[in-house]
Length: 500
Image (cartoon, rainbow, N blue to C red):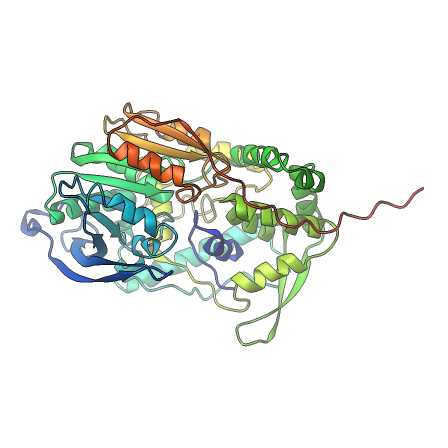
């Protein structure tokens, strides 16, 4: 299968991942080289606007005076006001997401709306999108698709693949020590100087909030405002499995608001546990087609379904669709899950690992206390420790990359910050959001009921709330209610057991 080391993404990329396995030295203190070019930006649904292609150069590893240079590319949308505020820099999630590509899709109207407050910068962070010059690694050995592996053997195989890829990148001049959140913060400061701005505003989601929180620690005096959604704290690269279980309780409550869904799914956690238990006892062989149409066998194990579910629960749409998949599997029907595997994976294709997502997560890391807590909770949690794969499985493999416990301390800042938190976010959780932002004393928090991880476009009220914050106005309410998506049709109920 094709695999990726990308996490916290919309369903398609998360499912692919599930199958898988400044400053310069004094001699370099000149302003970064920059370029700009005007063009017509077009969204995927055909909307157009005038924009500017821009780029700047930064060192890959600022601690190395001989570092190679990276070209960071961005798209700049001019402000629509005569009195623009600080430039607004969009920080995509992942790590590994592209800000430029994000602007082409569902959030295009929000990018346009933000222009009333200043020019908007869709940035491709180092190692992402148009700013990525690192080759994809295809390690020579991968776990067999048609043979059962324990979780320990699977993790060991991925660690071996990651070590091989690190050597592959080093041989090609890629310095993995440069792919961490601290370097990306310095990139933001370089971008600020490149734009000629005294301050910038940060606007991010998921990993983008991780980067924004690090920036609040390191460059608060040069930040005007911060807007974050689905926050990932600096010590939250690996989520707590018990909080994922608590998420399923919130999902159960949401399901309970629909009588038909409530009858079909009276106990979501018990349903998931039964299916995982059945696959643990007896994995199921799926007969799929590879990219060339040849028959390929893929063994569906408990772990595989856990990882697919970990991607799907980002948003309620995916979580509700997966309920139907679990209900079918509960009566022995694996066609729905086979369809997901066939649609999103490439059976028989080589494992593929990207440098930036892998190195970024390893660098942010996890401390010993939290790792011990994760391991204890994972032993009984529905998804084990697989929500964050390949972390914590890669913890300790590359100690030279880890930024250390000082990096993982939460920021303390006076910068005005807006936090948007979805109650049905299956990747980051409301209580974790509060912990990540506890040191921000100019914080507005708005809870978006029924919203998931990708909450910006769930309701126009979210855009209105961001606009009020950008104008410096108090929130109209600390609570927004988004509509629940339609529940997926439930397959037939399991047959009644035979009478004694």
